[in-house]
Image (cartoon, rainbow, N blue to C red):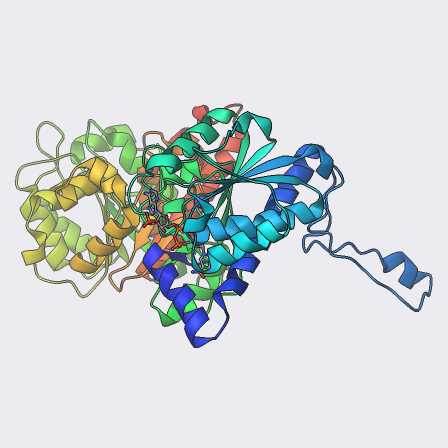
Length: 546
Ligand SMILES: NC(=O)C1=CN([C@@H]2O[C@H](COP(=O)(O)OP(=O)(O)OC[C@H]3O[C@@H](n4cnc5c(N)ncnc54)[C@H](OP(=O)(O)O)[C@@H]3O)[C@@H](O)[C@H]2O)[C@@H](O)CC1
Ligand SMILES: [K+]
């Protein structure tokens, strides 16, 4: 599934209308219909009506066919509702095409028997184009209409609200009557369904203006808008349902859409990942690769252990953990499956810059070098990391303190690598890397990750709710697996281990980063199910749930 910006959506609309010759009013009709279908489905759920078949077609003829009847007929039930008389919906209508979608939806809802009242944010005479056609059709059908600010409107007098005020054409914070209607809708306590995006949301970045609709359901039209996946927008959108309206998905590649939702289909068909992770019948530990991990200090011994154990659980054949000598006695025996490499240490248990030669030697016999979990900072660490960057032929996975080293260095001046680099920052680390604030990182995570990955020639895993994976070639994937309970110390170290393990098993950097993030999130979901309360999840639970 593709994720698009408002500008890309306009181009997709344009291609469909101008190049394919599908009239804009047809797309708007489709939009109105799918919005109405989702409202009917919602009314059914809360009215306790059973769900009919997914396509909305009841298999009414089946019994007749079995009985040998010659004639069968089935009816479209997507827009029928047994308890329609109990429903009264207010349709908040803006002056643009989003309002037009709402007007079309209102007609379909009325057909089901649901009472609808149109609430225009602006005088209906100011609508133009297809929205004006919809206004006239609704009027011809006799749908009651009021104009906000001119007529009395009490949103408490309805059973649900369709928000069709502002869509992808909105600019800035909602103004005037739009702002007042949004505030009134939010405080009404009624269920709100948004057409395309919640009004007041920045469709690209996920920023919410003041005010912004808080929807229970958002019926997103044609393509998922980026802002619906990025917080706080993702929180304002409620349950997002993406519905087709006649714009072919194949057009997305024509206009260069490069952002995907990270689904099993995208992993398999787009990235070429074997989701079953089949093992070769004649495989042995050498078949599945060897990770070299440079991690841990006396103060943060657990981070390396978590990464190393996660790497093993994610399926690589061998893991060598290179660690400071002072840490060694407390680690021996804690994970018998690991190989340990003593690379010396300073008196206080920190890393020695001189360990680099030993690491480079070790990396010659390994498939991946992962650096950073619990590493701490130490004297000449920039030179240390530069030597690894320039000296090893292994793919590099860089996390935690090693990212802070990178952030302090002018690493674009380092010799370019023939082998890939994956950076796995959380928002704070990303802020240091990009030299901006954490709030600026979170403002538009997708764009930031894509820009950074391209500019620096790295694969970037920007962690957080809906982790973004961006490649140097300009592709991006937004993950949706995971659980809020995974916000716990060490969860990032586990991810580093998983990604490194997948790289060692022969996945390329985009596959390993994307599949690693996906598996990490799934394991977190499983770990949450195994606990009485998700707040109880600790990083080790994620490893055990892999
Ligand atoms: N094209 C198609 O065929 C299809 C389009 N589709 C649908 O159209 C939607 C996009 O429609 P759109 O481009 O008409 O913009 P839309 O979001 O309705 O509103 C823009 C209007 O609002 C106003 N306005 C702007 N900002 C404002 C603010 N902050 N506060 C207050 N007012 C503000 C501004 O008016 P102005 O102030 O400039 O006079 C402008 O006229 C899209 O989300 C989808 O639902 C789908 O059905 C697919 C087919
Ligand atoms: K809307």
